[in-house]
Length: 428
Length: 200
Figure (cartoon, rainbow over the protein chains, first blue to last red):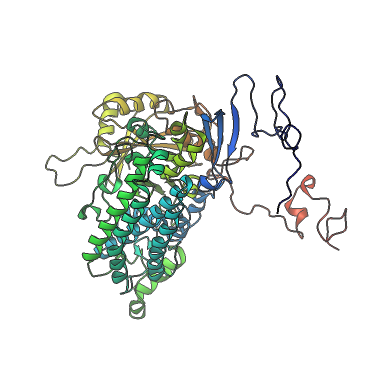
């Protein structure tokens, strides 16, 4: 049993300085820059939230100016996870950049591979065969579901509903099993490469995905049964963190953060890539633009992603998965034995990679968090001259100060959860 | 490399129009022909404009209903140190109404004062801070121009091409003389005799 310190006669614990009339209260450690301080004139208290706060979903630090319990100003401080990917890209060949992209949005790595590969393929002016495109779509949508599951679990847990977290983890594990089966790695798969895929999928892939797709909608019903009509969850989220559509657009928000505000903008629909225009799916939008709407949009998105996977698996064409351009993708092993040219291509690709023609391209994909853009500039060399990554979380997070203005401090946690940031995506 | 006229959409509609032709048309109406340069690559339009026209053009692109580029997608920069104006600052803007995307570019040197677009698009504020942080771009009129990703006391701007990112000294016990300046060397090392740097 813990030994409690003795209590003073007036009931205050001994380690607390008694409040005196007319003397501003200074925290014992208040000499630091951002430690608790009360500015006597404005009565605003500045406190730190993070970077080690569990509900900031990584290393995000918020400097909150509080008036009582109300947030009057919020200053996000980012960069704790800055890894310099954009500088690293410039010293790696295009194919070597793929594993780097895995580490940006680390909850949906295949979508990052996807975005990078598409941008490089636009520079190279190549297209990959339909089977490769379909498998890319399946893998991307499965990882979108996996990412949304983590979001749902942690968001619900931030608000106090712990059960959903365990359920979500269970479903996500099945997706990771599929990823492991096709690529050998559970999370950082590097499965989607420039010019195609790491390899064709094994024959067990289709039954595994079919089994998952058949089961998953019932699981979403389960999560919704826990949360959607839950009065505590609704009280914590409805009307909180409202972001109107014009503001959301002017901040460059995308993904469910923008669609929750009623703007039906989805990169898969606006600029279809990799055969997304062949699939039937809806783009769910919200009405009020609050935390609850963003929750509803993401849950609907999981169902839509499941629909896309179902269609892609049923219509999965045969044939090769990689482009036939031998200057980009390694030739098959049997060809190397018979053809001198293949041997040379193999040697050239292995030693120095490929060289896209000089040019620039902006290519975007819809990641689990929004528009993931790659602005890639080639100077004709075998490495990107410049590759800017437009992380969706970066723009979404910049609207946080607007959303938490004059909200309660305890609700900041719910708002952060609702924009679903990944700090690897923010800081890059 | 430059295409003199923007590619207009083909009326037959058998091929999708080049992205960003609306912006190219609007800029062609606004600026004299020798000031704007339109570059079409990979079916995407990049419009180069002089830096002193930036605010005027962006405001028109945002507010003119024929363009309506109301969404700031991103802003970035690329460094070409061999050129006189070494930075190419690129603004990617999107129109949700017309489902269109354009890249607006200005050329700048280290001394050029690039006006901030944070007043037009609040979302540009962080992107501009990132460009200031990683490229050392001089942005004027910004509400809070501080480093965003790197620590405030960081020296240099890493995404410049002349910033060497490799070969930074790492201090080990065997190379302290090489890796650390004299004032940074610890007075003693674990396992070493106090006052001496070298292991005996």
